Image: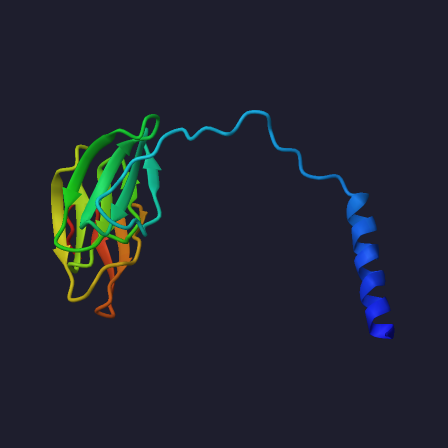
Length: 152
């Protein structure tokens, strides 16, 4: 009997407390999406942004570039396996890894500049500092590659 009274007292206290709270105000106009674009499979990579473009890897084995203001596709570069690596971007182009074991450098138009093969998946995201691209591979190695040539 006492337990039932405590439950009712707690419920009444909760209802009185909630009645005194202000509820969240829903805006009159819903928020509109700016744009969306679709890849051919899952997108697990973090997007990168530079020069009015967004770069995103996908499990459709591709790196995609889309216009940041409209979401319209600019180009797609296909690799031999998933691209879960985020891109690093500079004035020379776009750098990323793929599950095919390669690290890629593309120019701004999405054409291959160089490719460096490792012995494992490259799902890590690269870091670009002073012309050196740093990236890890599932082969257990950490690579420092010349961003211009792809050489170690």
